[in-house]
Amino acid sequence: MRVNQNPPMPTATRDPGASLDVVLPAFNEAANLPALFAQLRRALSPLTPRWRIVLVDDGSADDTAAVALAARAAGLPLRYVKLSRNFGKEAALTAGLSLADADRVLLMDADGQHAPELVARMHEAWLRGADMVCAVRANRDEEGPLKRLGTSLFYRLVNAFTQLHIPPDAGDFRLLDRRVVAALNALPERNRFMKGLYAWVGYRTEFLPYTPKPRGNGRSHFSLGRLLHLAFTGVTAFSNLPLRIWSALGGGIAVGALVYGVWIVIEHLLYGHPIPGWPTLVAGLMFFSGVQLLSIGIMGEYIGRIFDEVKQRPVYLVALDTGNPP
Image 1 (cartoon, rainbow, N blue to C red):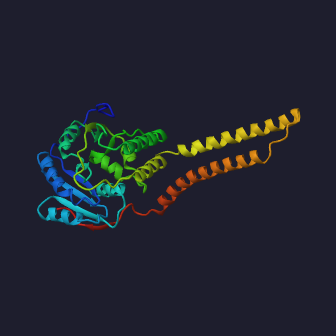
Image 2: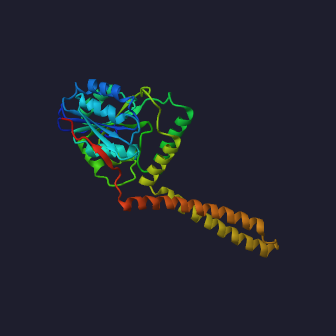
Image 3: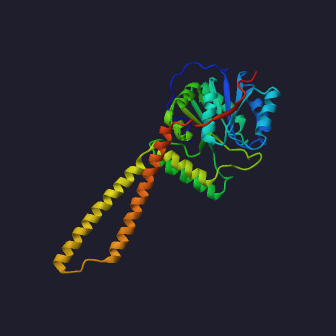
């Protein structure tokens, strides 16, 4: 497995006790939070005395707020932020990154599948000079065949249509240096495809293989439909290749139609064959109408993205923010 995305380079000495913020986007994860909080305390306390959890509640309908606030009251260094509704994981990650002000930021899920024990290895890679340390799944054996197929198609589609390379099994479980966080926060787009943004900002990156733990409680809120929507967002956010493909297809069809028309005229003049009638005409109209509608739909998706951007609505709205822990 590839370890480094960039060759080694000399770096300034980094402080082993540098501050660390843990961004946890959560949606109906009340049952998983107590165990995760305990694991994070055990994993982070030996690494630095200056660590904090930034929990972004993405519109949960369960007791996520009560569990988080109780842990904060019991002394856990936690900042609780509740969004006004469910904006989605990409928006929750964006909110957490904008609020995190530590020297390093750790992104991880709140469902218990990202092992806090791996943070020590991420810490070591950061000390060696890595600006971004990303956990990469060693395998997907625990997933069903349909989800494995969907995930494989997702990464193939995004990597084929964009100029970026997104590792197929890399997710949001990663440690970011402060300058990477600053770069991500400086990106203004509203349609956030975080995996693409991680790749776009670049910087020195190291990959660590890991095996996700079984989900503690509940079920995944990520469906095949959301995966397809995210894939289309990634393609339209980082590439205009679909527009070029349909432009080329339109040009090819136009040339083919011209050649076919010339051939019909020549055949009629030389051999006296009758010009094909309604069946050919109707079939051609139906085919070209379908191509036109499909191309208009793809163009409409890009126009819709432009419409979303020019409205300049915020990516998320905060309903409650407890501020930094005492």
